[in-house]
Length: 146
Length: 379
Image (cartoon, rainbow over all chains, first blue to last red; front, side):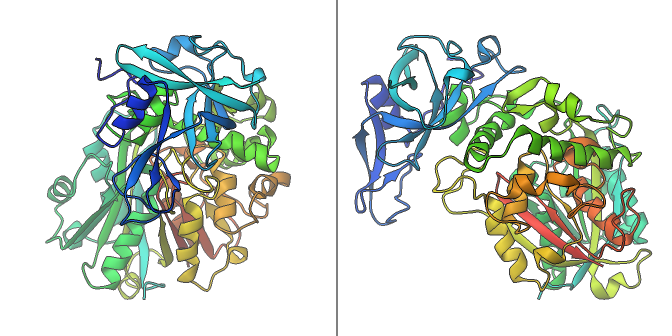
């Protein structure tokens, strides 16, 4: 893999279970073993009860658009050629203070950049779609949940 | 106590340009020597240093080039644009507690002709894993996302962001040192500018600059013997809110209540000066929306009122709170916000090119959106 390619997330031991979940078609987020509150990004300790353990839990993969940006060039490849495209922050149904960043796509398997900014609004419901972008690398993207 | 125990007695800077021929090291030394000359202090008296962790010329290089004395304090502040006031604040604390006597803070950067930091190799970090793979690549993209939410929650518009860009440009038009000195900015040009990351356009972004700046901090007692009138470090704060993520602050309770709020609490804790007493402010402006967010954080208006605060020329000379009176990062120079410190000093000396009549207090802030710092300066 190309270390310069920004589409490839560096995955450390804290993040690995999230990306394993994506490969299995599941959205997985850490949860505090004591309070049950979600934790994101993943980490070794729970900020909600530091002597408790974060444990991994499957969440629904549904949420609403909290905000979005539409980058234009100059950008890095491959984004330079895909711009303008929509990047959303998705507030998860289970805890809206967990806002996952991702791309909004028109349909599962579709390219980023297919949705125009006019089609996007804050508050719109979305659901995760798991997209394999390179061999062994699956990212959650988001489709409008009409 | 820190309050008024130390003062900035010298400021210095190089020219600002898209491309300067000298190295960052040479620019740093020139700015520092200019600041020491301004103060009337011999370089051999310098025994304290503070700069940014992102600064590429270290204390050893500076000290051996300028002929510093035996140095007993050196400190570096992280988080890029959040660091500037922190450099002065750390020197003030060190001098007030006797750890050094003559402190120099500086920043030298060739961001104009050098590379764009976001285009380098990915290092393991929250952005690299959680945001950059989705094309949220540059600082402007990260702030665009917060800005859209801010507009949605509070009815802020591009007209409000234009108010910021135009106010700061007008100040630069009065300042011959500013990169945008000769370039006026109209509302039509702002609204017609190309997008960089919607909802932010070209004029919502700071400049790309080569340049260096420095200032000199000593005790209030020693300041009385310096060449220039002292500008007192009245109060200092740093701020890292709960569950904050630098630049990608999307995973806390309230992303629009940023580091400014935490920093302001500490700043005003150490002061009798209230926001309504502040005559002029130098607010970190890498992007225009940081200004309304900072106006709220530092208590000039209520939550959500920062955009409306910019109306009716409030941020311009003669307005309710003139800001960034040398042209800030948007229109004078972008050197990680250090020019805001030097301009704060000029305002309180009474020799700004956009002088606020009788200014006796000035707020100088580091970047909102990253763990930050701020200074309250007074004469």
